[in-house]
Length: 151
Image (cartoon, rainbow, N blue to C red; front, side):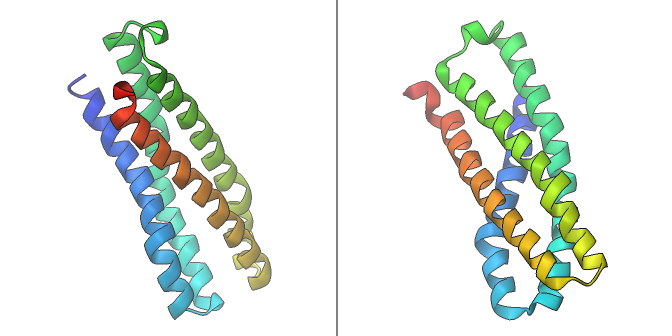
């Protein structure tokens, strides 16, 4: 537990915090200051770096979460509903990330390589919407993790 919990929290902070920064801070500034020929490669390269951290998070979060569930609580039957909700939301978030990575993100990069800016913009817009959904799920999961046992 002294290792699993901090790793779990740091992975969640990196993932959800990164989505918050990208969605709420970088996106509006990039849209204001940069034209699509500059903005689209910025996003492609930013996402490439960020997604490396997300890949680490999607390994660390389930591993440490399940470790705590089974080693600390003795299995799911001994956990509260908030833990079940966290696990469910975490799985949905991971699946949504995998879709983002393997579908619109790959199409974004292919469109950029072909200098097809309208197609790249369409893919970036899809990524934006899906990251927004994942951000909401991440905030709900964080709220559940921090307050769920008190409800």
